[in-house]
Image 1 (cartoon, rainbow, N blue to C red):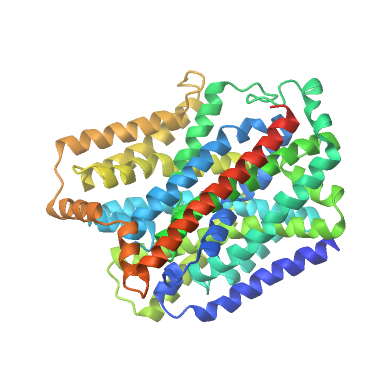
Image 2: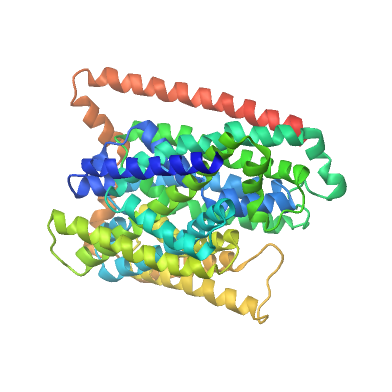
Length: 530
């Protein structure tokens, strides 16, 4: 029954995705669903994208092995802050500037072909690396429940995902993400509590007696506080400028939708994540010694829940993989076709040709990711850290400086992006070769970020922005989603009353989810004696 339910739910995703494609009439629909995203759709797609294979397999496996607090305490908190920054700061500002993709921002801000090319290369490399996580996760899940060869499953999954994403674009991804979100929510509100209930809080607390430090930040490996802080910083910087999260703002209908998403979506994202980590601790009680540890939650679904619930759980696990992977396909397809081929190579394409190019770009990306995933180069968690680091050292300083510093210019942007990525790779190789050693709690990411920031400041101080860069900086300071939304509402009948109603809803949502957060996390803290 579990496999039947699993297959039926997955089939539903594909059918809905294909059905949505009929609503894609032009490139605006394909890239940003025509700016028609409601609160429930943007919340659904944000939370669904946040919960990926890295969470449900890699990090859950690490929580099972070392203790739930190793990543949950500072790593997840960093991811939460990073997501908040991505929505309220990064995405909101870029949407106000009319960006349809993140590379749009680099093109508008600097009007420099080489800045855009460097930014696009970083985006493609980072997203392809992160996409590998989703494919490996998909292979693990399907191989576990079907017994089919891992390599064959990866190929089949690639074909299925292409069919799922190639026609609907962002419109299809947002709608199907929302359906997947409700499926994934079953893990946190049904399956995780079932596993925790069978394990028992007292037995889970007792793990510290047989596995010293299991319920500490350092975990059974007794990791240093410096290591935990580095994870905190990595996840903040990764999530803050991760295209898969920032781009979730672009389809939003207005600023009220964005702000509600920041409250509701950013609550559900860590809630769904942390309950899984605690349940992984419960699996250490129910079935110790699971290998590989990435399979801990899969074993939990299959062995400790009824068949029908197990089917929903596996479908939800696959939904988390499909959601993030489909987004990466779409974004990299956009980068190859719209940002690289059309704009930088100055190819004039009509609407039909543009959509065809975007879909063809996604097929190319799918084949590349499939080939890398077949090699299964490393543990899922560490692949995600590597991919995230590329955005942190390559994009983050440039984007923040572009928003806030008047002297920021194309030369500083290029030097910062290149030096950040190059130094990160160089320091990493020197450390692995034993030529370079770093103090405890300091890693190559921190050094590379410092290099990126210092090179940006140095280049910005000795060079001058051109007329376009100064004018666009002034335009950015005049633009804002709040003012754009207010103007749009005031054009409507009873616009002022509608604005007041939206503000009241924002206050209500804020109070409600603050209360829910205190109750939920207070309960776990008391029960686990934290």
